Image 1: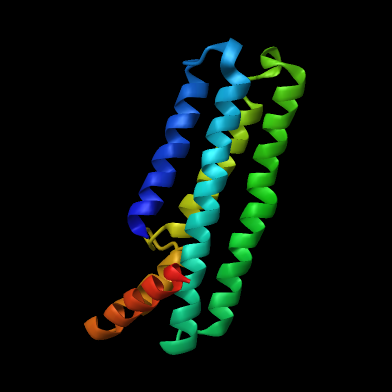
Image 2 (image 1 turned 180 degrees about the vertical axis):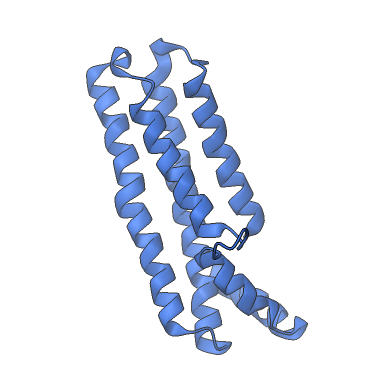
Length: 162
């Protein structure tokens, strides 16, 4: 899961840099944005669903607090409904208006919001600031035995086969 977190942040950051420094062909910008968004949306759906599966197992079998699970799941739903929907609507505006409509601030600000949500969601505590929701379940998993972690992995494999 942590490797997936690194990957999504690298993906969003590289997308941000390409837009910020203007390393794109304006003739193909809409296609570029649509392909990048499609990948991001698919990635987020897949990752967040997998994380939800892990949280369900932790809650049902390993004492993870249900209130934490529900809050975490709700944050995933809100991310998809708000941040990803906002990014999608910005790309749709560019698709309808043409590449000349792109400004340095609109899409870049939305991407900053997406990256900010991911960072806040996965961060560990530091400098007196609390960790994000992912840190809560990571700490819970750190308290499980090796055998329990092995069971969780087996359960996830079984779920994936269904």
